[in-house]
Image (tube, rainbow over all chains, first blue to last red; front, side):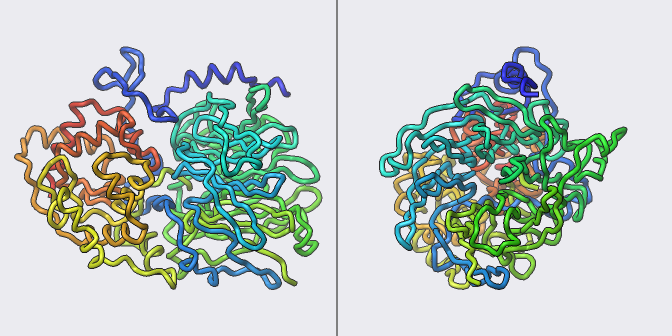
Length: 423
Length: 199
C-alpha cells in the first residue's frame, strides 16, 4: 500500500498539469505567442476561456440570484468593535476574546512551548501569539508569503504550506523576536489558484498531510488534484492518501484509532439545499470519496455522474449542511469540558455564499461513538451571523488548548476566541 | 462552496454593511471626513475623483471596499508604486474607509476617450468571451472589492492588465492574474478601449 503512487510518478504528473497556473512567487515576464498561454509550447491549441472558478457550473437562471463569494477578510476589527456578546455557547460554557489584531487569522497550531502559530490566506502573514500571563502578544513572524494558510509543527520547526510549496522555520519558538529565514522543504506542488491554498497538519506517522483541491467548482480534476496528500518532510517523499475530495480545509487524526478524519466543501450551483458539505473518515489508503461523480455519498453529479453509481465511492461519516463551508476541525482531546465531549469533533463553519439564505457561520460539534459512527451534529458556538443575513466574522479553524479550552479563529474579525467550561 | 472571491451581487446585504454598520461600537465610514482626508489625492486623481491625467486612475464611484483594499495593499507594500506608497503608509484603516466612502459617493465624469467603433466592438467581444462581467458586473460598475472599469482611463487599464499578466500588479486572490494570462496584447488594448468608452 505504501508504495502506491510514489513521488516520482507524481512529479511527472505535476509537470504534465496543463491548467493555466502562475508561479507561486511573482512570475517572470512571459514571452508568449499571441493567443497562447504563457509558457505553452509552440502550436499548442488555445483552450477556450473559462468563467472565474466560482461561476463554473452556474446556470443562466442562477445568474439572476446575484450570488458571489464574499470579499476576502483583509483587516482586523479593533478590539472594541468586536461584538463578542453576540456569540452564544451552551449553558456552562463561556466565550471570551483571546487575541485580536491579526488580519485574516485562519489555521492554527501550537508549538510545544505554548506559542500559537496562525496562518493566513490573503495577506501572506504568519502570526505567533504568546500568552503573557493573561494578555496575549501578537508577533508577525512570517511576511510576504504566498497563500500561507497551512501550519504544522514538528521537531521544533514550524512548517508553513504556501500555494505550491512547503517551508520550514527552524527552532522558531526560541527565536520569535528574530525569526530565521525559512528553509524550502518541498516546492513541486501545483500552482493552481482555485482551491490552491492548503490546510496542513502533522500525522501521527510524522508525515505532513494537506489537500490539493479541485482546480474549479465542478471540473474533471487532473489525477493529482481533488486529493489529500502526505509528505515525509525529511525524505521529501510525497504520496497520495485519498482521492475524490473536492476541497478539504480541515483534517485531524482520531486520538484513539489514529484514523484520519477530514471536512470537505461540496460543489456549488446545484441548489440551495444540495449538496451538503461533509465529514469523512479514512479507513483505507487510496479510498475515493466521489468527486466529481458523486456528492455527499448519495447525489450523482448532474453532469459527471452520468453512468456512475454512488456505491462506487466511500460514503461520508456525516452531512454537515449545504454550503456551510466546513473548514478547520479538531478532536476534543482536552479534559476540562464535560465527559461527553471527549473525542467529539469541533468544526469551524465559515458560512455560505452560494445560498439565498445564509447558513453556517457557526462552530459545530459532532459526537462520534466508539465504533466511529457520527451520532449527532449540533451547533456549539453561534452568533457570527445576525438577522439571518449580516455577518461580522467567519470562523475558520479550531484548536484545543492545553488547559482544555477551545480556540476559534475568525478570518474576518482577525481575532481568536476562547471557549472555556465554567460549570 | 469556498472559492476565489469575487464579491457579491449588488443590492444585497454585504460584508461592507456588516463591517461598518452592524458591529455595535463600530464607527460608520465618514464620507465628509473622507473628503477632507482626500484633498491631497486630488492632485493626481482629480477633483471628485475624476482624474484628468490618463496615467492616474479615476476613483469616482469606485466600490468602497475596492478603494479601501487597494489602499491597504499599498500601505502593506503588497501593491507597490513609488508615488502612491508614501501617501498610503500614513493612513489608518479608518482613514482609508473614510476616503473610500467619499470616492464611492462621487459622480463619474463622462468618458474622454475618442472611441473607435471597431476597437469598441472588438473589445466588447473580448469582455464577453472572457467573462469579465461575472465579477465586474454587467455595467462594469464593479462591486465590493471588484473595481469599477466603466469610463476608466485607457492608459491605466492597459498598464494594469499587462501588469496582471506579468505579475507586476499583484491581485488579492489570483483571479485577475489567472484571467489575464490568455489575453494577447491586442486583446488588452481592445478591451481597454471598450471599457474606457463606457459610462
